[in-house]
Image 1 (cartoon, helix red, strand yellow):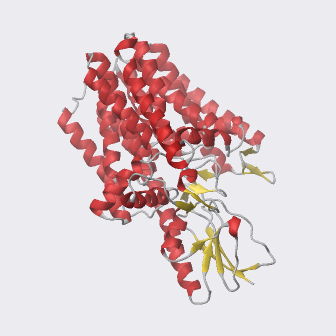
Image 2 (cartoon, rainbow, N blue to C red; image 1 turned 90 degrees about the horizontal axis):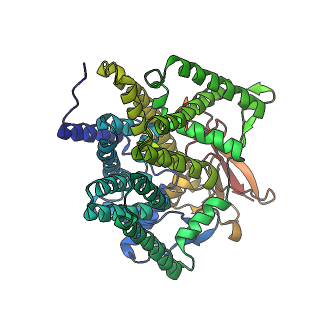
Length: 546
């Protein structure tokens, strides 16, 4: 017997409560990874709103204009400036403000899924319970806000074409612009919506002008930033994305990309018995085994050694094999949908997923959970559509059996987000402890490394080293976080190692550790979004200038 679906109002209430309940425990998270860039930009906007990147920052070991450092547009920072003005600039205040875009992304997925499947509530819950959503939703970066604009733009576009509503098409075009001004990847909506419109068989003159409007807005932004900063930021970000490469060559990037998809949307693993017949499940197990054999033969993925000194890192190998097989399962979902559905909606979802994957693996300079996030709503809707096809003959069965995979996914997501919060908080606490210990014995405190650690070191009065203007003063202390970014060697004749400080924020799960192979924010650290393991300690080296 078919279980009755909740009403529209009840579904919205459920999603709002679940989203808030999932994110509120992490609102005290310290500023992490690229959060400080958005915080600094938001604070600058408060004083100079028409020159959003008109200040300098040392983010890679050199003092540079912000316009040359950041590879994101400013809309998220403008929103943060508003949140800071209304609620204050503490971590809790800003995270509270950023729950709104996260909620908008979830409700937008629900609204979109109503056009593409019969269980939109389940599709939206698939978004909330994914590790990539909780990890992104607990940050202050632009990704969740971009996702919100993205899903609402697609939803309004589908409605506009279906109802021949020029107003909704115009709103969709405005949302495309907002999405692109939140993160440049949003510009990919223009070809995606064009392809969907052509597949729908709509007359070109009925929708083309709206996409041209969106493209013209991006061209204006390129012109404006060229006038303000001497180079157009949109094209500059495209060049940056394609010229710098970390994480290995294309074979390693494809394996890492599949592992990121499978790990970030891990629900496909416990949901496999509901999605596939027994023969397909056996093929999935064979695929995981073959991936393991391939990894042993390759010995490394990018710079991470799977086999070191003839010793196989079995925990890592097993996890990556499972994640890659899960990523292949997502790809097979899209292929099956195209083969069996052959509808404009199926083509939309398949192109959405494929385009995001190709960008993350073959175009962008690094694979990260942030780059995988845009495909999450499409994967979740595809998952529900597949469940609908499998359950069409026999009904949906028990609610518990259907929801169990999402509960498992949410558990893993919460654990990964908790580990990420502990990592962020450890950088804040380490900055406090180190400056406290060194302040009384040093003429000044300098440091290398960036991310949240830089933010808190500077808040406590320490100064970042500038490799192009390196002036070392006797009796200065220099702190180097060994797992951080943009580190450079110091002259051994000028400094001596004085002490070390170690801390282990999370003992058995990590999102960023080059030693463990976890690189949620960049596969330059590792080919998996998170790793269950005995987590290596975060190590801080303290040098004293002769």
